[in-house]
Amino acid sequence: MDGRRRVLRAAAALAAAAAMRSALAQDGRTSSVQAAARDWLTITDRGDGGATWDAAGKQFKIAITRERWSESMAAVRKPFGAMTQRSVLSTTFPKSIPGASDGDYSMVLFRTSFANRVDSRETVTLEREPDGAWRVVGYVIQ
Image (tube, rainbow, N blue to C red; front, side, top):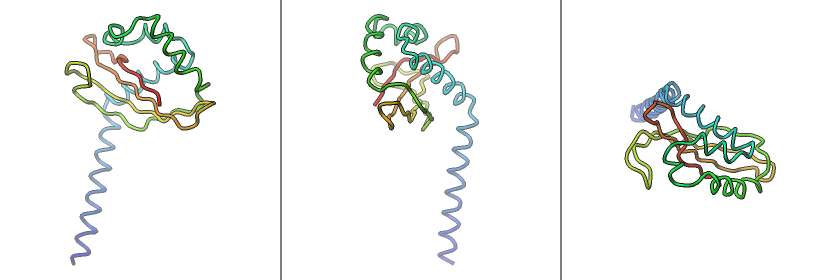
């Protein structure tokens, strides 16, 4: 009987985990945040630093000038080469991020392959701004 209970507990835990993943996948925020992150990354993939800055959120624009961002983005992204594949690994919704006040944030982690680097990670941090739109406020590539 003890073995049966362990199996049932394990099955219940798996079912709960699957339900949580399903709920997150069905969360309207998840799909809209991922779409906003992908749209911004599409501009990044074209190498258009100015356009990525223009599309970014207020906190991003306060943190770095358009010119400096364009220079930095080109210097960091160019060695990676062209993007060949990108998939979402996770999407979270923290209420705070380092260096910023509490707010409505999301962090989307991607596994990305580039021509010159097969297994990279990109983290796109977004904030829901007062107009309701999700805009990028941070980007890290490793």
